[in-house]
Length: 164
Image 1: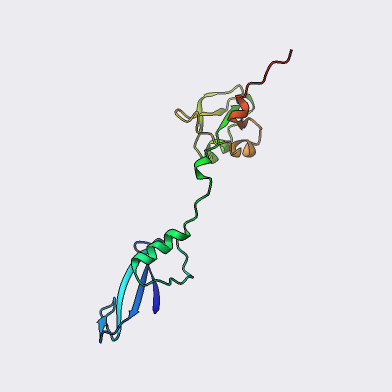
Image 2 (image 1 turned 120 degrees about the vertical axis):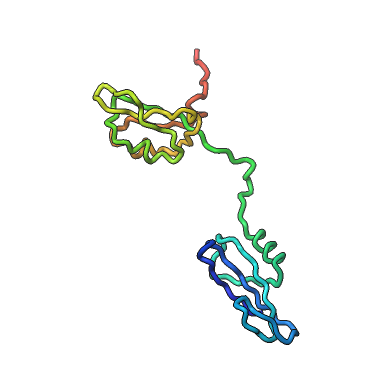
């Protein structure tokens, strides 16, 4: 069985053409040319599949089943939860470099409308994003003045017993 892979750039997908040998005397390929002894089936496959592979299949159903077998899913997907962070901002230290609100992956931070004592706009938590921080520490790592830091939400709100 011959296999030919072509890439359709306009829709950015891979078209897999299977040339299946048959006993028929002639048929036409995708370009309209007559090819003796072959028939053509075209199957669209996700663009996530790499180019350097072979498909040992004869029907679109087998290709679909093969693709479903290679999709990787974490075994403990049900147990996973998105991390949550508590954000702390020290406005007096901020010098409005804007790194924190530009590089926050969750867009939690925005430029405030008020000035700090030094005359700079400091970051604040965006409206509706109070619980969106994932404790990645990007803001605290990138801040040159140490004006912002994060802490794990559960750790920040853990109540410790009072020792007597």
